[in-house]
Image 1: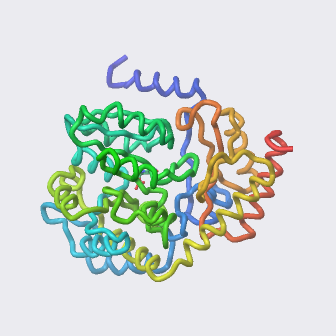
Image 2: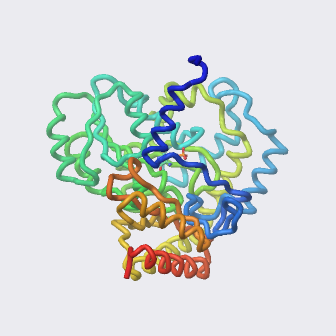
Length: 395
Ligand code: PMP
């Protein structure tokens, strides 16, 4: 036996298998859409983040193809050397206008935005006050910074105030971080209260709008817009990978913040710029959203319809307020079985189990999009009814 056989890795994989959490990736054959071919079968796709159906939109594809012809396939360097193309800057200017902020900086993904921005803003001697259910990329960004981190109970404003009071005299910068929409439950952060507390105690606010970009606020301008908090949230992160339909992340805020990140946002400095076709497609997506609220209106109409259908059947859909609707089964195996049986009925809805969600909170997570038709949603509701009764999740 040689160390190069990586037996310790095989052992870890076996442990995952014993715990029942080893998984194979589902395979999408063709574009992400309301209906997709998944593992060889055409099904209603209720698990993508393609909220507005933009991932396969003709206008985005045309913009990407034109950019491909004009600019080539790659940016050729990191932005700070010579990978900064005018199409990147055009996208940032458009996003800044769309978000009503002074400036925007685009990163290669939402994940790298969090991993880059947090360590650039806080350091030793600072404190991050973080919602306990914040996304993994926020957790990693916090770890990469040398700041201390303290967590408050999920969306519990009393606990947030208690934590602020506990730490407030011991640190320089105090940064409160929250997801705008929480990805497993589909609930919305209590941003107005968070901002009030931040202003009361002299903290900065940082909201990660990955699941709110293109979803919440007018034409998907995000959670600050949704709550009318323009100018009061210091740092807004958005993603271009979900509702915007392409890939990328960005930070929106004051000009000095963006200039600083230009010098100290490590993924911006050390990882190659997004391909120009990606920037062009994102720009076209923001153009579409700026022109009308049609797509976001349809998304919300569909979200309300499916959520009501599932609730009326008697499913536990938790505290969801957005197009993310969990159907909570409780037990891990039951959630996995629910997902499997739904697939047999022609619906792909991924199960999510411990440790991604707490024990006893295993679920199938549904994400409806603007591209789903009423017929898709009615078929989905029928499938949930049949399988839910079989598994005795509903009567
Ligand atoms: N933040 C949150 C809250 C997310 O849900 C996600 C995506 N899972 C990300 C950041 C990462 O975004 P991206 O996919 O653009 O890297």
